[in-house]
Image 1 (cartoon, rainbow, N blue to C red):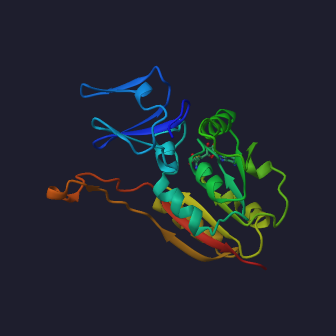
Image 2: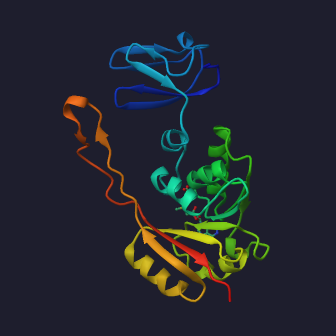
Image 3: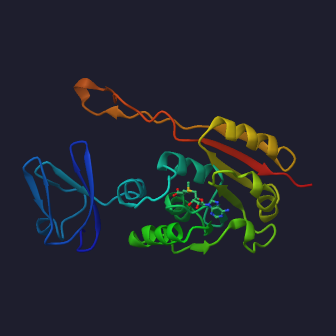
Length: 246
Ligand code: SAM
């Protein structure tokens, strides 16, 4: 049932709107009006005129609801990362930097516990706010500070993901923080950064893989079914590896 204060995802053709359900509000698109008072108490998935009303998925919450002050990891990459790192409800996950909290929200959904480090207070606060606003992140410990200076128990994390401009200075500490054989991932926007990381990882990490994820959306009109005219060509390279034990 749709209740006051719920977050709702409204579809109008291809357009998507994320709104909080407040009885006095309405949405006006192409001269059609959806009065929120009319959908209170109704089931999810109802159609009112051309409007379709659903509860939002995590992807929709991140893309439409999260305030961004840093580059974020897009759901297409974040969802893959969460499963590629083998995360489940028993996993204790390390992440830095937190940024706007987009990856953190995904990690939190699948992990047992997430420890995320952010050294800029403004972003640390923003990530906390983004997750809290949507009822996410109860299993997240948000640390304010440089990961390099943080007190981290040795061999305490089941996995880690690193999204900072240059991950190389952190490799030694990262290695110490991970359990033996643990998977780790990095996101890097440019190819030369990947090459430098590969050179620096050799002695501490094995099973290395580099990949990128391309998603092509299609027009959903049955009579004209074909790919969308434009697509995102590149977000970032993803580097995955496993901790080697000396
Ligand atoms: N993955 C995040 C998301 O999906 O919203 C975005 C991360 S953003 C690109 C990189 C962040 O790392 C920045 O907010 C930066 O301040 C933070 N950062 C860089 N070096 C750091 C360090 N040594 N310790 C903690 N945070 C760091």
